[in-house]
Image (cartoon, rainbow, N blue to C red; front, side):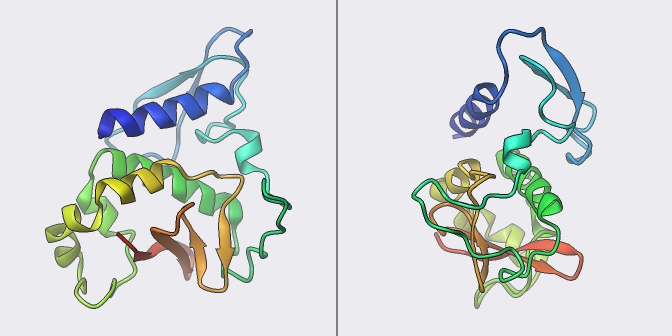
Length: 175
């Protein structure tokens, strides 16, 4: 499963890069401590702005691929779109690494009826983060994030996100 998710993330990243320029090393500043020292070599010029996201991914979307106009970020309660997208990228890495402890800090509790604490989350991690939930997070299209008055969601609605004060949190998991 990890290899499949990593393949999706790497392929998405590579398609966004210019193949004619020499590799550039960029430091990813918001990654978990276990990954911070690693660098990512990108083919082409540095379009990631040091974040692991391309300029296109960081650009706010005004029309979705299907032609629909998305709800404003403010309706979803998101006040800082750039920071939210960086949160999503960090989330992808934490899920890929099955970092239950750090993911537990990104949950707004209670999560559903039975997950009331970080300990509950960690004990139920494998049940909550099924293969489909992990894949849903891996496939997030940063330039096409659906949002409404309930928050923002992964492409198929398996995971919902919201802003809690200055922090972003997972507010629902539908597996």
